[in-house]
Length: 45
Image (cartoon, one colour):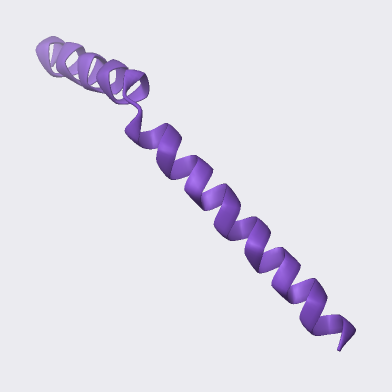
């Protein structure tokens, strides 16, 4: 069990130090913002 926890900790550290999740979160932010602006524009018409 202890070995599994250590492996999980290392994988989590590697994931959060990678750039992949940062790029994906920025992409999601822009998608959400575009959707919000689209909803606001649609509601004004």
